[in-house]
Length: 179
Image (cartoon, rainbow, N blue to C red):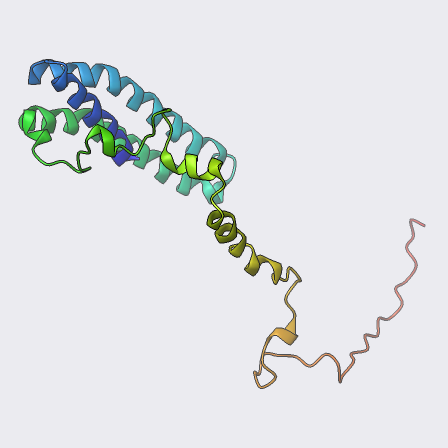
């Protein structure tokens, strides 16, 4: 969660710097705009994790832990990230994480959607075959309940139910006075 929130703020900060804003103005604008989104996303996550867990005492601690993580992620993203961006300033663009590509090497085609979609529309013969190979293991999947026969016969915990039978003798109960 924290990475998602940090990326949202950093991308907004870079957009403000490209737009010509000073470092201080870029920090304020990205915190105002992206910070609001981060706050409400974190609030929704915390409520979504904590809400269903409250009626169940066994899950309450898991939900509380998840809500605390969401709260801390939002708090760090709204306090530490803007401070770090203010210190880094334009040096945030010193190292590109994604290599820059010229327009002719773009991953997007002329129509505005990825070229891989063009291959799928064009009828790439290898792709459906590759996807069909993923189905093969599912064809041999057995969904039965496991039994003692799944264990090796030499294991002590395997009970041989075929050779011995157990007879249960239940004494008759006295008649109920309510009947």
